[in-house]
Image 1: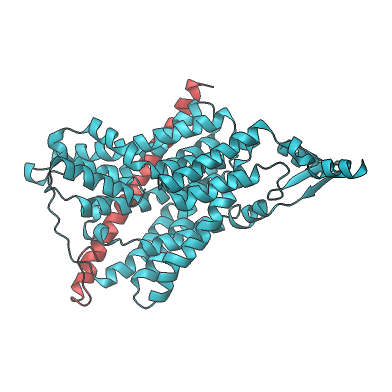
Image 2: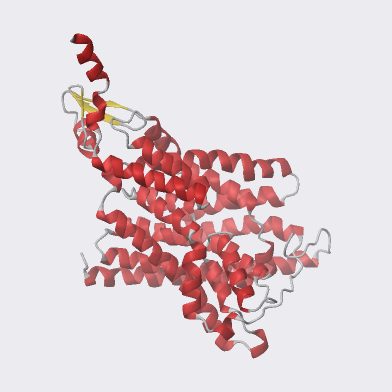
Length: 52
Length: 403
């Protein structure tokens, strides 16, 4: 119990986890931006505001 | 005399009642009280509360029981070990709650099916309109990873620490999925903590937000100018998200896939009847069984431990640091934004995935500081991002620690 070495050994998980989640999120954001651009080129059929 | 002895035998189970079981009845009663009187996540806390009483009756026929030469073995773990070792004279009677657990949770079926319903309920429009908001959904998962380290420091082994940390996902099905994947014995405590804190978001988040923001920051106005979102985008979004998450976080693909399948049913426009069924009947049906099934992990022997108290405390830590993560990232981004484009850092707190309570909390806090400051649509956008991000975080934990 209260083992500082264990705490230190888990810090890489924290770093990898946070970097991982920001990277995946970044890719999703980029994909949505591209998706919005591409689909808006196709005309205004069935367009809606952000909220419905 | 024979008649009296038979009558005594008939009621002999009374002597099997233990003080630990009585405590669990009280805990079950408290959960039922909170569900009914305080409206705290009643759909889950009420079945769990009732289930806690049901499984803690002496020789409860609702859960698995082990006998040695016809005598009930009080210690569940001991009985199971003796039975599995093939000890002579040890017999086993299955209980319906444990059967439900094996059929619906041990194989991760219930949380996944529930995700179809949740996906069908969520409108990702505010997020699609302003996808940058997703960054806060990611930031507000910090509590998960912080709690993972803290739980390990407090003596939990890595897999249990990961199961506890996922309370910070503020998302019941994800918590069940991850805790079950790691075979955590603390599932009962984890579920009670996860659903209790989700219900307590309006109590937990405001002090943390206030502590980390100034009044001027809380008064920052953010005009809502929704961009146009085409129907094609809405339809392609769940497919694209499933593919991306599946590639980068393969162990979360079942969770995100079922969530997005539900959303596709909602957005495709040709399955309104299925969408309605998923949102209401399907989600309700699974919810009924989910709460009462989890209760099998609330048997006194498994639940009344110091670790349960620690898990309740760690769950609070996870929610606090989730909130702090979202707010602090918004503050950091503000450093680089021009004065007229500043973000209200409170919206970062909505990245915790407790939907829609967290968004409402932020909106109400904004109105409290300035009655013309309407943050709801921004905070809803961040909140639904948190739903996706929490699943991704769960998948990353599974990938990193599940091996």
